[in-house]
Length: 162
Image 1: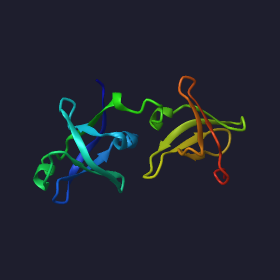
Image 2: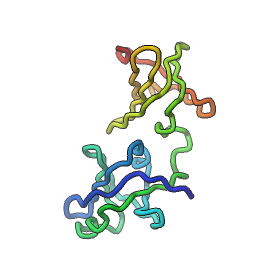
Image 3: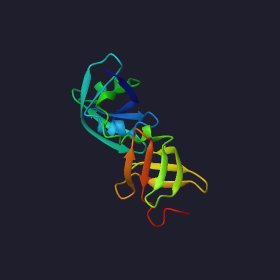
Image 4: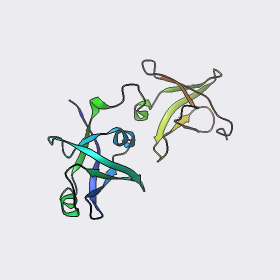
């Protein structure tokens, strides 16, 4: 089993055992997909009972953590997820850096230079001949993902070009 560090517990939140966790850069989607986490590389998995994104951090409740004292005791602990449980269909945008991007019209747009994680959806930054192109990762835009060839085919919606 391979573990992936996704963040760190910053502090307790409220009195009901909620935790505020800082997200490791590029690991937002791994948090969203997690049904359980590990509070250290050798720790057993703990079920996530609730989680929400707020101001760039996760507010999360873990099974067995019921009050502020228990939550505060976890301050500074690193949070890991099982990397083998990551989505097998390739929709982990952090893995797309460097992919060639072309439009459904056949136009070569450039390569993915950055992934921006937002609360709603990820945005890929495509660097090419002209100005950078920001494309939301939504079904209307991302048409085809070819993992072995490291290529992405997209539909550029009206208004996305400067």
